[in-house]
Length: 113
Length: 120
Image (cartoon, rainbow over all chains, first blue to last red; front, side, top):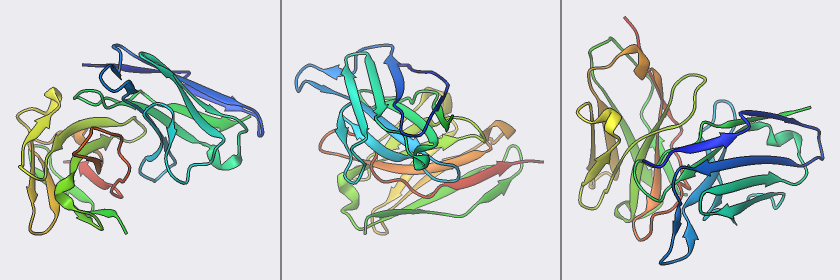
C-alpha cells in the first residue's frame, strides 16, 4: 500500500497571505511510461463532499481559482494557495491514484489567523 | 448535468447490513469506474473499494474484504455498496465518486453522501 502523509495537520494563515500544505507518499506515484504523477488534491468544507482541486499533481480542475497551485514529483508534493481568501477555510486532502488502495492523506485543516 | 445521487440516511443495529445506492446521470455509466469512500464523524477520508460498471469487477480495501459487496445495475445506471456485520465504528458518511475507465484519474464528481448510523 502507498501511505500518504500530510503536514501540517492544521494551519492558520492571515487573509491575503500564502498557505502551503505538504504531502509525502511512501512510494513514488510517478508513472514512468507517461511521466505523470498520480496525485490529487481535494478541498472539503463542512457538510459537503470533497471537491477536486488539482490532479496529475499540478493540473487545476476546471473552475478552480488560479490562486490554487500544485507542485512536486515522485514522493513529495505541495499545495499552495497564493493569497488566502475567507472561502478557502476548509480541510485539504491529498490522494494517490497510482495503485489500489487509493489512500488519502489524513487531511490538513486550514483556518484564518 | 453530470451527477451522482445517493440514497437516504440509514440507522442500523450492530450486526445488521446496509445497502447504499448511487444513481449516475448525465454521462455514459459504463465509461467510469465507481469508488466508495467513507468518512467517520470528524475524521478523514477512507477508500473502501472500486467497481467497474462495465464488467462488474471489483477491488476492495483489505480492511473491508469479506464484509463489503459492490454491485451495479446497468439498466438503471446505479451502483450499490452493501456492508455487513455492522459495528459502531462503521458509523460514517459514505460517498460514491467516479473516475474514467480509459485512464486512472482523480475523482471529479461525488455523490452527496449517505449517513449510516450504527447504534443499538
